Length: 571
Ligand code: ARG
Image (cartoon, rainbow, N blue to C red; front, side, top):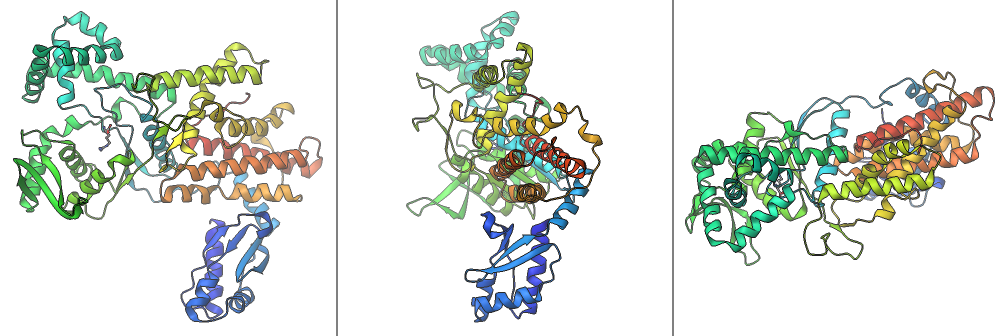
């Protein structure tokens, strides 16, 4: 059981014994070492509610407390409890972890959870804006799977609609072989097609016709469209490979896959009396959505030209996810500008009975900015391609590694760079609160100091290096954990808090909380490493410290892997 849970239960029981009505304990990890390891701060509130004196209540709680895992509990300030864990208890828990592959984290009761992430529009190449949804979504997926959930990865790509008209009309002017060549450079292809669309009236007319033909199921246009979509998904896969993202073509279920469900979806909305006509369009008006002027805001489900907008596809997708996939929960990792869209989707879907008690949630995130605080664009205002950013991460990581460790062979440095580059980029993303904008800065993210991936990866190599230097196999170390020095105790407690960190992270899907934990762990390890000799220690102490190094390495490695970040043995 998590330490915070044990403390919560014991303190709640003691509070009830001491006479507090409704007695939630509210135990948190202490923010400073002098506060002990944990702090309980629910006593003041409970005292206020029952009209008693907080310090008196606290005294009663301590007297009634049955807490063998603590070595001391002190009352502080107006009624906080500072709790110091007993070294024997911490050592005993760590001992269990030394033989536990899962580092003490038990599998949860499995739920089926769909994560909708990455989801680019295929009429354009993936750009830097897709980094956040892709990195955050992939981390969430890995954490949920680690806990034993049945996770459905889904990329709800934009693969249908008017934006494909010019691409198809352009492909239509080419012969079979040229189509292959054109599609091999998607970037140039997009540019040529949109230039033609802007400058050539006849072409623009053909582009509009192409959309209609495609939507009416014209064989030739459908097959051109399929070729284009396949190529474009292959391109996404290249980006995922470069960034070590666990999404692949088989996880794509794009907007077009709901084409045949749209009419039925609307029919159900109609049956539920939700549809109203407005200026030729079909809309759902819900009371809770009103514009600034107080007028009701429509959710448009069919446009006046008969086309189905984004809203309709998303409603069909919700219906499919509940009825066909039977998900318990669905998480949409999509930028904050789409907040209103998802509020409407989920509200309409609930009214229509598509969602009952399933948990559908939008997980919004902010934008990526340049160091001048402006939006991330190229000099001529174009989007920065994600594949270029991934390549640059590699090049820069290679330079950093070459500088730090010139003794590695070029080949080794290249391999290390392939781990460091994407890891640094993804960690920069994940370590920030996802709801705020953040500044993309190569030097910061590739630094070996501070809350960065290279810092954590380096801490891992230090913990593993101990075994390499002594030519020991970490898996065969035997011994008893003894927590003697304060630095050993601090490291031991941190190691036990992995599960608390993971649970906190998944409460509101905030990967930055797991990042903070790993950063703190690396810090406590660093203090331990500098103050407690490992290989120079003797006998039992040496074995115990080796076990602590191994637990640290495994926790860092597992934690990073849950963020989608690999480790290397040397860097
Ligand atoms: N393709 C959309 C975009 O690029 C994101 C799709 C997100 N998922 C969803 N179910 N709407 O903005």
